[in-house]
Amino acid sequence: MEITQFCTLFLDGACYGIEVTRVQEIIRYQRLTRVPLAPNVVAGLMNLRGQIVTAIDLRRRLSLPPRDADKLPTNVVVRSDVGTISLLVDSVGDVLQVSSETFEPPPETLRRPARDLVRGAYKLKDRLLLVLNTEQVVNVLQ
Image 1: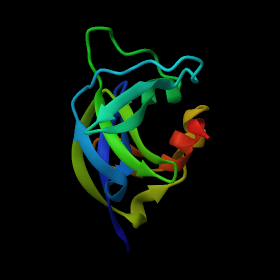
Image 2: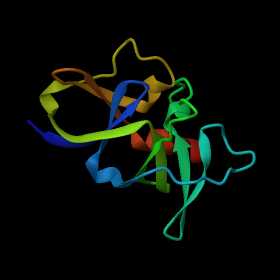
Image 3: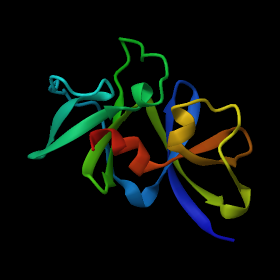
Image 4: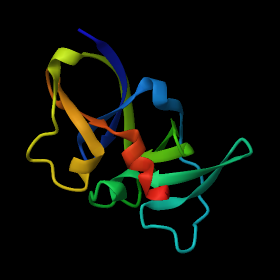
């Protein structure tokens, strides 16, 4: 039995997880500079202590309804093969430890593109933890 830690993120009421080892930091919303002709999922660029970081709106990436205009997203800065990327999420939860015994393939009810971006799910007491494939999520940049 293998135990894995996930940083939990919330989008449109659903709980998603990214491996803790992928998360660099979590910061409140930063002003973004729009990128002309960038894919729709790219919300813009932000300056993170002198480093230019691309911000991906995870709601758009998962084809979820837009966030309410009065609610600012949170930046989850992750490390990926293409570099440091910020994922804009509704909110961030706790770090959870889950057992490999409760891991299952993505639910059949999950539609594309979310189905292509979720590696699988863990059944928790009160909800489902959908595990994101970080590399697939940021793949829009290649």
